[in-house]
Structures are given as C-alpha cells and as structure tokens.
Image 1 (tube, one colour):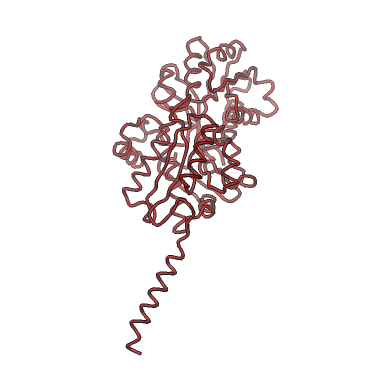
Image 2: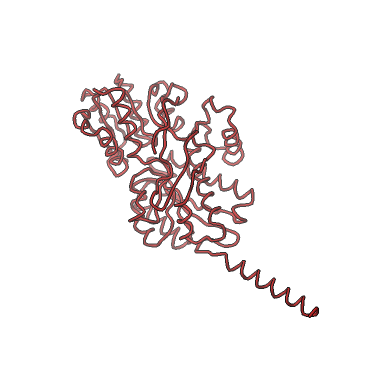
Length: 400
C-alpha cells in the first residue's frame, strides 16, 4: 500500500487540477490571461469633446493591468471612433463583435448610436454595458436583457429640474432647447412629466436643433422672443456652449438650467465663457476635482495621481474624466464578481446584481445598485449652481 501512495496522491492532484480548470468558463474574448472588451466613442465629429471619456477609460484599465489585472487577467479595451454617426457605429460594432470577438461592449457613447446597435447586440447576446447615455430605454430588461445604462436617466434628471422650478418659480414661463432625436426628446418628456398638468401653460416655447447644425443662435433668439424667463438647455456639449454664450450676449437673463451631460467646466462652460455661465443650475453625482471642498479628499488625491501618471494629456478640470474613471471602476467590480466564469451570460448576471457599490468619486450618499428588474445603476443626484469658478451643490441628494 505504501508503494501505491505516491501514485494515488498524483492521481488526486491531477483530478483536482482538472476540476479547477473545468471551473473556468469562457466565451469569445476571454481566456486565462486576457479579457477583451470593445467600445465606440466620438473621437471626431460634432461632440468630440466626449472622446476624453474613452481615453480616460483606456487609461484606467492601464492602471488595473499594471497592478496585475482582474483575477490575473489583463483588460484589453478596443476603443474605436464612430464620429457620432449611427451608420458608422453599426460598422464599428460589427467589427468588434464579429472580427475582434470581444467578450462585451462597454460605454458606447450616444443615444442614437446605441439605438442603432441595440437590436443587433441583443440578438447576438453580447453584453451591452454601462452605456454613456442616460436614455430611459436602456433600463428595459424585459425587451433588451443584454443592454444596461450607467448614468442617471435623462427623464429622472429632467423631473428634478421640473420639481425645482415648481418649488422656486411656480409662475415661470419656460423655453426649452432640445436636440431633435431620442436624446433630446427623452429630456423633454421627463421635463413635461415632471411639470405634470402645468406643462402646457408653463412651457411657452420649444426649439429643437439638429446635431449637425452649425449654431443654435436662431433658436436662442426665438426663445428669448417668446417672453420666457426660464430656460431649460438640454443640449449636447457644442450646442450647449453656444446656447450659454448667445443667451448672455443678447442680454437674456432667464433662470438657466443646464443638462448634466453638458455640465463640464472644461468642455462647455469655459468655451462658453465662465463669466457668462454664472448662475447656471444643473445636477451632479460626481465629485468635481477642481472644487476646493475636496482638496483634502483621499479619493480626489488618488484620482489626481492617476491622471498625472496614466492620462497626463487629460484635463483635471474636465468632469468627463471623472465620469470615465468611475464607469470603468463599475465594470471592474462586475468582472471581479464574475470570477473564473467569464461567459457573457454571467457577465450580465453580475452586472444585474450590484449591491450598494460606493465608488470613490461619486458624491457622498450616492451608491450603485442593480437587480434583474432594475437596470438603472445610478438614480441619485444633487442640484448645483455655477458661481463663475465651480459648481456649488445645494439641497439634498435626490432620486431613488
């Protein structure tokens, strides 16, 4: 019996090793050493200011890889330019799924762009995760179980503005600027829903624009001419900056509410003119690293150190770089939860089971939660007002 012991132990070791290997499950894009993910970003085109989000995410995964990766696997993010053009998005996503064979798609940016690929990726059963758009349609697990947003929904955000107006300026005459697509109409619907039966009376003018328009000057002149004393500016970065500048230049001084997607000091308010942006009201859910209240905050110090080392060309005044950093941290959490089961089905299972995740650059009190029936990771925000230098938060954290 003693002579057989080494052989028996060897057999047990082989069985144990085989069992351990068998527990590792992979779909396309994942193996023992790498997790390959893909995304499309507008590195060119009318909203190229958002491209820094993709660059910051690439930089964050470089940090993770330098620290050993996730469960020993390095993350490879293939980030392609789609120019904010839905036909190009379709082309690039097909390349990512069919040629690059990525495990999942992460943070594809734009409402129209993601709408163009949503049916395709759901038919292919490819995780379409943490989209860089707040359209309400991304929270529909019944019809699109492979698609999930990340940031607060536009309708939820717009309802907060409506509530604020009803409480502080109940007799307001409101003018609205919105993009003529699903993105803009989502904001408009949420805003009207928030105003309820007073919407028809309070909204005195609506002006839309196309994302390809050179300027929105004529729309701003028309809104001023309507007699509006309150302005809901739900435009994307370029048009939002133009609207802020034109509003000021023509001497119109309404209560000016700015959508959170355009609340970047670096990408929007600075081009518009910081002096012309004083008094803007928006909402936030991320820490502003340029705000003196966070100068001794450990999380902000760590973010600044990361920016210096991994994304030195990025602006520390651009909240979009905080956004990309935080979205990437959310995906890292999901991949950690996946363990050695890196199948697409398990990726979605873990993405839909995030419990009270506190990210360091989220505002205090805001947590990420998801479930198989709740595909809205962030549902809390706080009102803020621009004082010419920084956003100053006021009121309580609002939302779910």
